[in-house]
Length: 435
Ligand code: GUN
Ligand code: ZN
Image 1 (cartoon, rainbow, N blue to C red):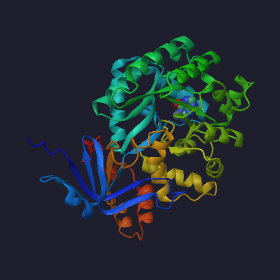
Image 2: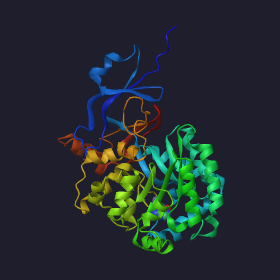
Image 3: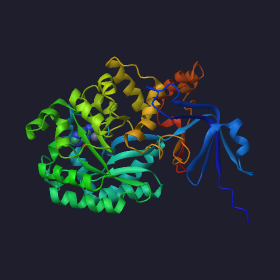
Image 4: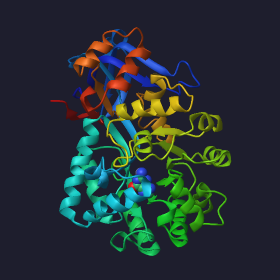
């Protein structure tokens, strides 16, 4: 008996990375007329159509996206799903923004109906923007994690998320305790971590809203479950930095608070990292803790400009993120646009190839998920998007006048948004198609 032919084949231009283009000029892989072959939700092969077409099993239907680009789905390394409904809420800085908008908005997640509705919208919005993996903050309520992973699982997505830990310096209605936070987190790890494609992140919101006892227990959990993720905020805003140092006077620096509780290790994702010093950066690199660079949020809240030269010199793993609702767009293309400008303001020139790397394989490497997501390596999970360089009249006009691949990608990064995503696939299945 012959086995049924389950190969899926997609023809278009193919773009992905095998390394960081900053260090390796052969990192960018481009097949002008390419073919992506998928079996059982995993990449079988990615290469030139002319070379691969003869290896197709007889009768394989080829989906042809003429004039479009297939690339790995975007990875957003820091985003808050409960803040979906408060995106674009104005405030003069991080701390007043948290008080006025964030905490009241997150309070609503004690209502399961509201929680489920927001989680579903949020996941669809990620897919509309071509983001197939994100590191997601839920709220302090354990049910908010169930709702999020439930929606992710329905669509078979590779997502990382966790319950916010927060036991002081916040309204009573959003407070856990050191013990209940650790207990709930452990139960969620057992329920969701590596359940299908779901991965758990231990999530102390930031040092100012956790007691020493809470950070201590978070560190113990991180040690007990070494393949879980850790996510938090650090050195985002000057007032926040001052506050953190007052609350933890023994720490050498804000980052050192987390270090002293065992929260720096592989799979730890630190959002912002604007006001670090060189000792902090060295420690990030040594421990393989990663930076989540949140350009739209940093500009919107006036937090500061990420220092590319110093981070690159120290060899800190870098990834890009939207940080919605502090960030102003779900689109990783718009995030690249603003990241480019943040880099320019600090004297660094970021080529488009590097931005596309950071939004795909760079994110995967920061999360220790290379080989699983982020590029088209053989057997990687087939999360990919179809980019449309003609999505809008202006994009069509500009991309018709580009002289190189770098110029084409640059135009997509600067002018693209959700409209540029013609389709999104997760583990080989269509999960969004632009109408
Ligand atoms: N620091 C602590 N909580 C938050 C948050 O929700 N958003 C941002 N941008 N920074 C934070
Ligand atoms: Zn954030």
